[in-house]
Length: 103
Image 1 (cartoon, helix red, strand yellow):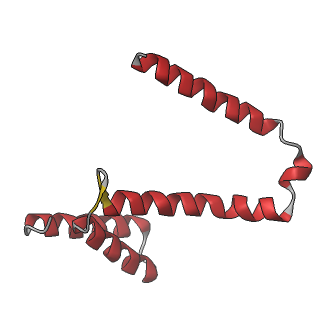
Image 2: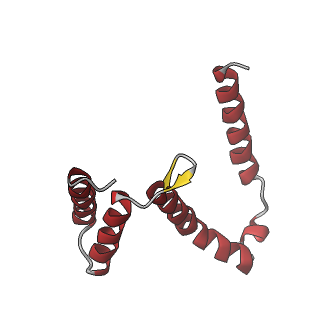
């Protein structure tokens, strides 16, 4: 199977899921349990992506400069720093630690 067939198949499946989402009856979406899940799902997905990108290298767990950058970002967020400042602080922290020789 070529890569294009896989890409086109995945695109068709994604589009079918999107169209199927429009056919869900509104009364199902208004249930309290569904509302709670849909409110928390984006935060959970974002948190899982951050953890995966920060603490993994390939198929191995890693504790390196990215973790320190994340820690600095969390502290900056707790201090209510603007988002751009948070990103810059995290990037500078990770860069300085890598320059210093930390993996």
